[in-house]
Length: 149
Image (spheres, rainbow, N blue to C red):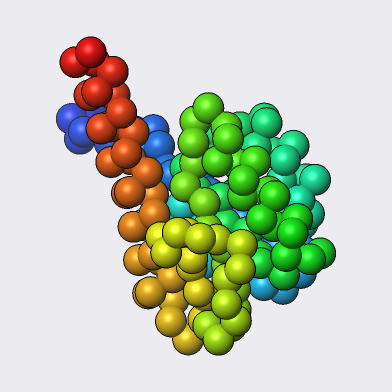
């Protein structure tokens, strides 16, 4: 006869991780940022070009879109972020740059600038969390306005 264990089996919960689309045309920074964001608890999709990013934006919803400022040229990055902001699900958007001295010409709002420095991972993850949190707050406010109207 076998003894039956009354030990509780842990229940697996499906946690919904915030989805981030990372767009960077250089492989090494793309992989490094992807790894950092995943370690920070985000579900990360990557795109190596603006065209690939547009396809991903059309296929799936993201809470945040991070794009390299100097990808191909500054204009594709700016156009990509503008396209992302026009999506019905309105993801937060930000420019990622490895150099804090370089000015972000494409983003006009301060909350849309994210400066990435390899020596300050905590600040990067904090800014990403702030952007996603700000997006969630705006969505909640919009839902309340629509519900009370």
